[in-house]
Length: 498
Image 1 (cartoon, helix red, strand yellow):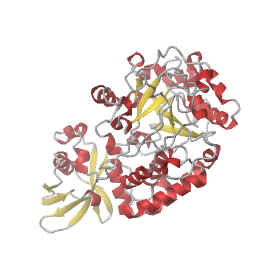
Image 2 (tube, one colour; image 1 turned 135 degrees about the vertical axis):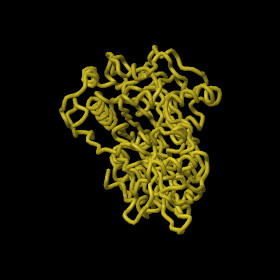
Image 3 (cartoon, rainbow, N blue to C red; image 1 turned 90 degrees about the horizontal axis):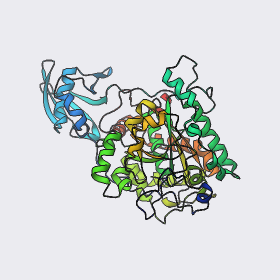
Image 4 (cartoon, helix red, strand yellow; image 1 turned 30 degrees about the vertical axis):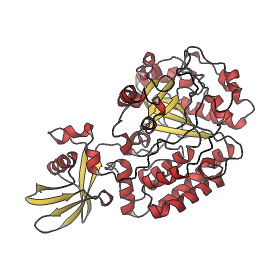
């Protein structure tokens, strides 16, 4: 994961009220102010994710043991397609699964049935004890919003509106619009942009980010995440998300995709708790378990610190370590349920595609980009009502910055956000829903920036062929999503719905 803060020997940052001199920062070595992605957060665990594992999560258990509303739907495949099971049958199945039982019997509709979820790669099965009739079962998360079309693409709307409609808006949204783009609030200085002089490509990228902020500032808070050779991993995540979950990968990459890895850390409050109890004394925000779910971000396009300037990071590029992550790519493909026999060949093809379109894959056994600038910048918009659920204000290295908490209060004000870091819980359930999180990306290398959509199209087509068979598609989606499926999910190719 790309981080903005320096990992110098001093353990804490300077007082954030003292903004660093951007001119001086621009003359530092490219590796200062950031740290290279080491990708140690990518797990090699490719064990199947079963519904029993998903439903045993502590935040789910209570509903299955009482009369409270259920947060999942159990479906059975009949001749006419998938149909919802009754509430009673669903609760009975969930009660067993929540206790870790994978083979059990239930009584429903005057019949006894054996339910078998012991083979997660094959989904669930219901067998009528008397007749031996077998039917497939699956579990969907209940009440999730279906992904919405992305109207707010560059140039698609009035720059002062959050969408194409000019309908009446709430006083809160009107107030946020009156404050203007987040990066310009509180009389923020634009002097960090001086480092963009002479780089027309970078200036155009930042101008587009500014336009996005102006358009979306009413209902969305914005954050900036820098990354380098994790780009290939993010791109693969995005393509898999497009094939399986309608993620609109033409606009941005996807930092994380394995929903089941968020079971123990479903929100920012739990992430803060885990930081204080587990990570504060062990690698802090560089602990693999933290990085598996969290992103380091800045809160302004014109940020000056602590410890880094977004514009300088984008221009300076990265000094990459002499490491190879070919094995990491192969592990990722297996964790996304690409058949093992096809993983090595697919990895070769993905690296070749990357080289063709100018993406730096020197850390994966491929070629470096011609410009020597492998940096990327993600502009990350989060709906204001979700900010405190997914974000906390942070000091360098990840400790909570209590002075800026709750972070939503700081971001909803007309204060400058030039100085201050944050940590974002990159939960795929939210990141793949355009009505919750919206992202845009820019690449410092002009060639890959220009070619990125073509690269994504080729990558999606390749993965679409490999994950094209409906049963494999459903198995992959279930495993990636954490043992259940979104309520709107179907086994057909999801791209045509995006």
